[in-house]
Image (cartoon, rainbow, N blue to C red; front, side, top):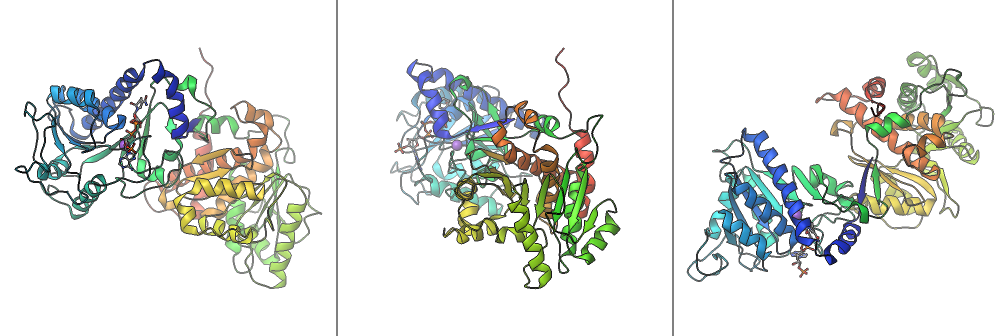
Length: 558
Ligand SMILES: NC(=O)C1=CN([C@@H]2O[C@H](COP(=O)(O)OP(=O)(O)OC[C@H]3O[C@@H](n4cnc5c(N)ncnc54)[C@H](OP(=O)(O)O)[C@@H]3O)[C@@H](O)[C@H]2O)[C@@H](O)CC1
Ligand SMILES: [K+]
């Protein structure tokens, strides 16, 4: 399981080590990790490290210091490195090491619009920092060309000491880089690709605690982060700006408090997913009740049932219109369909809402009544799509974590409106974690916020984040399948608290973990079904058993 901590928490864990004089040691570990990862990238990209070109944007704090030390060691391996420095100052020892190794420098002029203008004669842009030209300095107007020609660009402007977005002149420098990249200038014709961007600790402008973006932000291909994953790198939209994440152990783990966020990995899934015992029968394996579909949207019911069946549910009892039941029987004859009431059906969990429509007809009203009855039954429940317009009716004073709400950002905004909170879809997309957590607290339910990174917040404050999917999953019917997958897991796992404690998840958090496991399975199935190309929702359920089979439980330690 991957764990993430707030930037503030990680800084707090560094404090005792800094007081003990360990700061330089931590920085050397961070720099070594960064240099190793950049060298690996260069070798992958070019076949060898020697002769590569890198540019680093080195801010005034320790984040810039990390990158300067890392670049110094790369220069010693034959890399040509150019550091763009802050007019506000630079980590002195790291700069000295970088220059001694043979790195070239250029300092941004302090004015907001100083990129890429420079006037060496007046000294407004060109400086080598020590006044006597002992070391190589380059004219400021050249650094953009140098950046375009580089194999790797290291973003080390700001780390965990950032306050808000980039200030001038860094904001102007980053915008100039982005404009050049968009225009394919100036070296795109000479070099086959733009430089790969590597973020040092985190992309500058990403809030380490929340993942909010303060533009302009350079989108990284790789983020090399130190000590532990920062929360902002595993939640949207920060995760999208971070690219692949590589955590470098610098010896902070003893001082770290409880994680803010967790991410289930393949090993967790293998341990959590249900498997039948010798004496199990269909009723003990979990029966899922499904209230879904309408004359208008019959396919949602079919897809939900297919998603649940793909997870090996013991039985599905479907409640809904006769015409929809007939269609389900054609595609999935094993589903038991009826038009009965919730009370008449004995199940372990309910899935309600996909495709129930919002028409006023008697059919829709009956489906909505079934949704309410399922909620009143007190059984574990997934409430999706149409059911989100009725649940919860108001803020819940009591905890109902066994009720899993599965909105996307737009549906969550509507839910907030019903709770008299004015939050827009745009605000939710800019800070998903904040609003998922707030919705869980307000409703008392578990909230799964769908997106490229799916967040699950429990009313107890636990957050899971899963990001295994592919953009191809943004297709009609994908959410219905996800609801079915989570419903099946809920029916099978709700009572199995021991299974969760075996992977360090408290009983009260198992509802959120079930939702997260469902999101992970769904994402993995999407990747398998898409295989790099387009995907339609029907293929998702088909892919789930293969994903399941390929999950390896850890073997005994020999
Ligand atoms: N501590 C440790 O032991 C270890 C730390 N490590 C590394 O250090 C990093 C944290 O270093 P840090 O604390 O020096 O902060 P950092 O992010 O470099 O920036 C601070 C400077 O930026 C400035 N500044 C702030 N906001 C700004 C803005 N919006 N736009 C422009 N400027 C802005 C701010 O100025 P101020 O706001 O104070 O005026 C100050 O001058 C961490 O991410 C990791 O990489 C590792 O080596 C492991 C050991
Ligand atoms: K950075």
